[in-house]
Length: 189
Image (cartoon, rainbow, N blue to C red; front, top):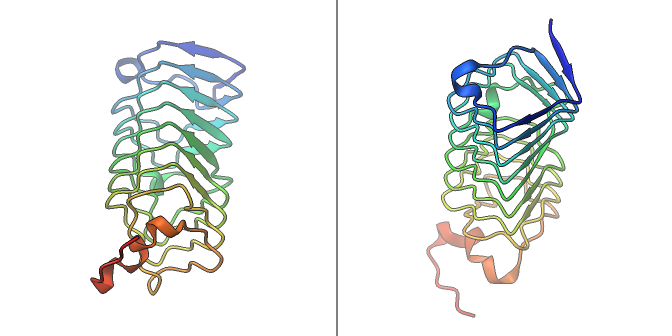
């Protein structure tokens, strides 16, 4: 198994060449293209991705342990196929539209200024996660654990309190309509 540690990859196009190593630890990927790349079985431990495009990458048994994504394009990713052991990441100013976190354990995950349009969080555990200034238009929350999750600065979400666990979740008064949408009532401020 090949191993790469403390390496910097700058403006590398992996979409045509693929990755040669199977484990990357403490590596930085800057402005790299992983679009439609098969990342199956690869481990990323303590890695940072900045200004990268990972859209539609294949993530079967891919391992992300303490991975950080900054200003990345992550469209259509199927995170539920990732290896679930120590799965942890954070997202800052990322586009995650049309991605899926179905049944992922994402406790304390931080989403900061992200677009999460039509993202599937069905049956995910988002306990204590933070959605800071995130857009959640048409995101799917079904049987999702949202206990102590912070939505105070998030917008455009629709969450059914009867189909999700929301104990001690935080919401702003201005966006309460997202919790009451199914009742078809008018709320005026």
